[in-house]
Length: 182
Image (cartoon, rainbow, N blue to C red):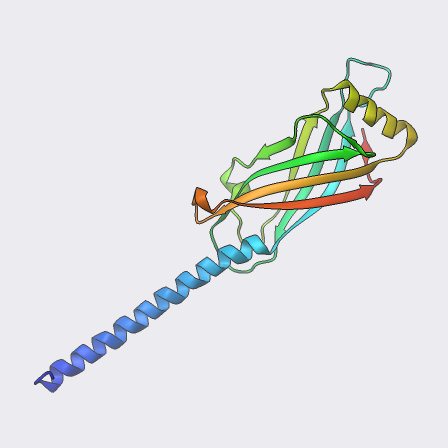
């Protein structure tokens, strides 16, 4: 027991103030950590467009370019620390696997990587189709007017700038039509 009442009151006041400060710090950190997981879990990815460019069936030396545009949007209102790192797609057209190397993209700029509340950006995956069989499959789809796509998109992200927290999310899209040929 402390002999002086004044010293005892000072210690009690210090403990109460320290507890309040620690509680506020703890609550702030919990909101930040919860915000990181909310940003990642509330990510909505939609396929905005599919475009084929430079399609020329009469010129065998011209290979078309295939572009998918996806919209990444999060509805989380809470701040956190999440970064998008990589996006890739594996593509089937009219039940034919397009043998081109997986279309992929690294998110290099801080603006594209860092998720924030209200994040709403379009990101394109694009590649020139460089095989004759894939070129023929695209020309066949264009000539018949049948564009049946099956695409597996995968993207990964990290939380708290820690490479060991890397998480992958896989999305499957299956649709017919809605292909723009330029």
